Image (cartoon, rainbow, N blue to C red):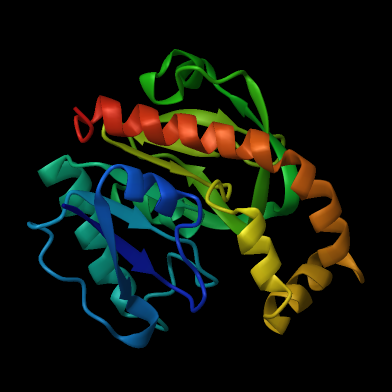
Amino acid sequence: MKRALVLQHMNHDHPGRFLDYFAEDGLIPEPVRLFEGQAIPSLAPYDFLFVLGGSMDTWQEDQHPWLAEEKAAIREWVMDRAKPYFGVCLGHQLLATALGGEVALADEGEVGVHDVHLTEDGLSSELMAGLGPSHKVMQWHMAEVKRAPQQARVLANSPRAAVQSIAIDSHAMSTQFHCEFTPQSMAGWSSLPMYVENLEKHLGEGAYQRLVAEAYPLMPQMAAMTRRMYDNLVASSGLRK
């Protein structure tokens, strides 16, 4: 069996629909709960690195000292080892900063269902092959990548954020949007008051029920987009032969 290292920044967070893909490809996920002080192990035995989102920001190393170690591990994985990587939200921002890009507070954050559009590089990239030019996605972020790393190609953007997805060669990619979210993810929020309260902070009273009503009918096409990106990544990186 292959092994997927999962870097986790918050309780109750997980790779969502990617876990189904891991199971199909014989990848066993092994989470590291960085926010609880668990150390990142040697990267050598792993075949895939998945970096989740989180409520902290990439520049908060004083409050979360493990962020520095995490950035170093991402840099080693993506640049030195050149092995398959996928990051979502904070995992997208950490990939950018680990490789010399810039992340800062967004001029206008995105929470809920929003549109993203593939760039010219995205439309020609093997990592986005088979995808149309525009997609409805789930967003939940108040910071964003302001400047992509020199080595990166920007694959997607949105009206509010110019860097919604990046790629490093054909083995690493990340999305600002939460392509891992599933109906099960959203159902779980109903038992986590802090998630519902946060939604209402940004979207007003009753936000959870409105978001469920809007997002659930869109979940099949969101799942198809995520599946395509994952399949493209494992094929282009050589993980699936």
